[in-house]
Length: 71
Image 1: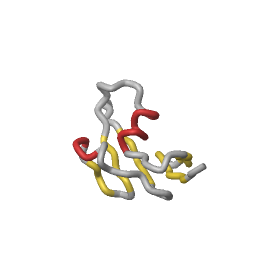
Image 2: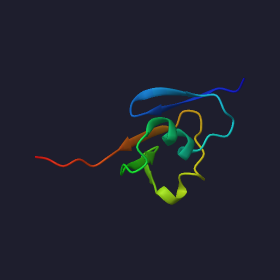
Image 3: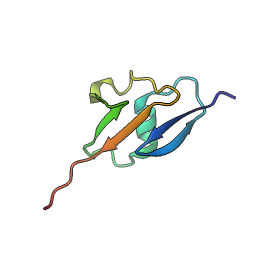
């Protein structure tokens, strides 16, 4: 079985597929499809139009953030 790990918002996340895109990963973390988020992989912002093309590699560090309002 193929296995690799990445870090998502500071937590280790195992991946057991050879091909695993950023879009695949986000589907596991984001249940509400209408939520607005920004995603960075290894400190590089990835545009939403690139999520399906961006492959996750072993050791990648992914940050998922969403805006919130308040003071």
